[in-house]
Image (tube, rainbow, N blue to C red; front, side, top):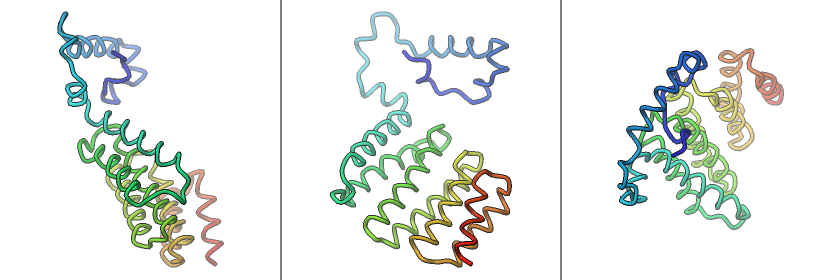
Length: 195
């Protein structure tokens, strides 16, 4: 069994915890609990393994579907294919909102909705992308995607939905919330583009 497949709270993975020996002890206990009894390994089925780590399996499946979708030219992709991938990523955070992959999955849903909206010229889907970025920012406020998500909202409003007032509001909000973020220069450039 790979140690990386075990989901651990972040505080247990901190460097100070590792120096104190907490991490090795936790790994040893986790491996002991997760390892099958001797002679029972042949009884584990794929279904049993999926049941023990549904979010990890769901995320890996979503990644496979996305890879398959992106391997096809945009012109030959269908809405049904996008929905299949979107649903796979949604399963990750719907099944376990606290899963470490949940913010990544929410971000992928937002990005794929924006892509789908652009390809199929769908205002409704683009607005759904904005809503998904908002969901990502509010439900996972400590994730590293929060600032780029707000910038993406502004860009969708400006370039895809042609709504400069909404874009300006999002850019101003970005600069108020993240004035020192490396992306602040892009927000300022977006505001200049509007004016």
